[in-house]
Image (cartoon, rainbow, N blue to C red; front, side):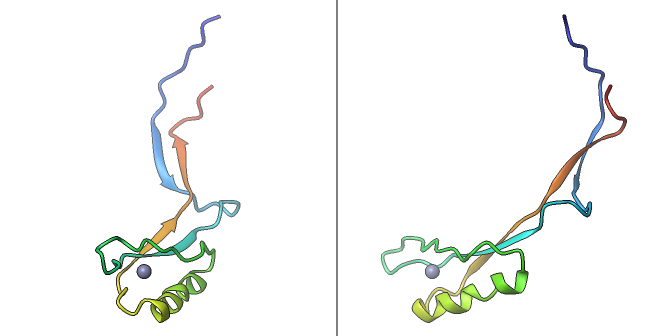
Length: 86
Ligand SMILES: [Zn+2]
């Protein structure tokens, strides 16, 4: 039997439902070692943003030249149909 799919308009949207997975935060070092290799060290992935922000303070104690970081945020998103497909 051939399955027919009706055309559906989808929207990609941040998932702000109460049961959405938590937003996760992590910091990655953008510093370079003396030979020019990227450090790439990463802090822990945390639900709490302030907890994630503690890691660069730990890393800088060991690598005082590593002063650039990227904040990685993992956020839940949903695909929402304009009309429920049936
Ligand atoms: Zn580093």
